[in-house]
Length: 225
Image (cartoon, rainbow, N blue to C red):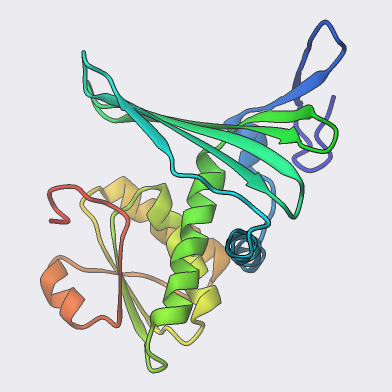
């Protein structure tokens, strides 16, 4: 089977009742085109449905391993707009460098059937960036023109384009990070989305923070502290 959106093969699991469960890998999800503005509106709608009692988002469950530095989180939820029930899980292990994996299983709540089991790395990064944009749009002063982001992982990579969607008048974008490859990736991603914009890499985060209207921390490492 071929995914009509990603134009990549989609794996399927067929059970004894002939119920198909599509399996979407990280690469299947990676190239699906979606604009920051669309993600922001989807997340805004999800929050409003929770506030109206149409959707349900209970607190996550967290479990730590008694044997090593690892943790697992389980997050169920129900979206009343699409009538979909979801189970998202997150696993992280830090014994020899950080390893993390995020997946989500979707169910059609009307039909009572599974829709897909999919990697959720990009979905999580997009949703978090949309959260940042919504908060910035609601809380930033009207005169905000500068933003400082710390960290150079996937979350930082998406943050700038979402901030510019919510606050298009931002004219000074700063980044404090310590990994050269990550910094290059963040800057390259912004140029793809906004060819006329670039990021100023700073080495003194305290000074840069004092000159910024917005502060976004996407990393909680020692350098950030």
